[in-house]
Image (tube, rainbow, N blue to C red; front, top):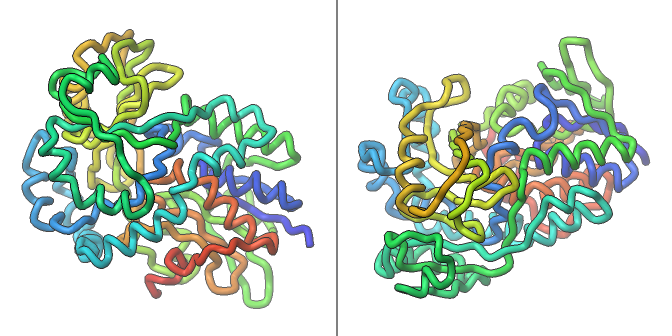
Amino acid sequence: MKKHVIVIGAGIVGVSTAIWLKRFGQEVTVIDRDGPGQGTSFGNAGLLAACAMVPVTTPGLISKAPKMLLDRNSPLFARWSYLPRITPWLVRYLKHANDRDTRRIAADLNGITADTVAQHFALTEGLKAREFLRKSDYAYAYASRSEFEADSYSWELRREHGFEPTLIDGSAVQEFDPNFGPSITCLAVVKDHGFVVDPGGYVAGLAQEFQDMGGRVLQATVQDIQTREGMAPRVITPDGPIECDSVVLASGAWSKPLMSSLGLNIPLESERGYHIVMTDASGGPRAPSMISSGKFVATPMKAGLRCAGIVELGGLEAGPSEAPFALLRRQIKEAFPLLEFDREETWMGHRPATTDSLPLIGQVRQTGVYTAFGHQHVGLTAGPKTGRMVAGLIANQPTNQDLTPFAPHRFGR
């Protein structure tokens, strides 16, 4: 039966959901306050991170975090005035920094990240937006072999899920890519990854092709989702209610208030991320590279070299801080001393982070409201698969993947 589905959020997750819903024969309206690809999806590292199943909350984080917050060269920042507000979330988040939970989370994330390249190519089958996609290696860049070995826990998890790196040492690093500086003496290179040469343009292009399929995009603020027993949900905007048969909530870090209106208090926070684009750049890496010392990814893009990463705890309301940009600049200069560029473009955005590092994917009870948010660092990576699964649930074409770990009611009320 054909349904009218409203998708709230026009980032990669929402637009992917909308396209798959259209392919499954549904009537679809996408609503976003800023327009397609203008939020978090605009500013990510562009990486299709197939091996990104290892959560931040690995064993030992509890003891490391305070030192990192006080170290100006650490990629972890906090707005101190926001810490009292975020403390309850942090306590729940850090409880997962143990071996048992880390392995469970990694296995669950692997189910939505490992086939990311195939999922993006399936999403763009027959679409012009495929021109934004590139297949590539993914290099983890370390200062030394011992620094790589100190990261053995994460690599053990990646190997368990099928990602075996090729190690490159010493002078062979510069033979592999001459633009790495002498501070990089060890690479762990993983095959079968990919990247997007313009993430914002990619999502905007997908949204346009969704409209060409007969879909509708509205720029508006969603104030509420109303659910009524025995009746379909409806979406409330400043221009009044919009009737529908189902709703997909894919508004990332801004999803929490709307979930509250459904009776669920989701432990969701923003992990503020930063990027710098060096336009018309030369002397950067030939493939996406994670610079281990700064925990940022350097990706060659259409506009230039984008370096994106950093975690800052500071909420949704405050503007960008200068210290994360300063750290990125220092780390970039050290990793790529041959880098030349025209100018800098800076950006700060919000990654939606749950306390268990897993997104919410599924229906909220029997309300007709479906969740598709909370992907933290893997929104671009897992967006197309998430959209395909949620669209399948609505169109009675469910996935054979167990979605229990991602259930929206798992945190209780």
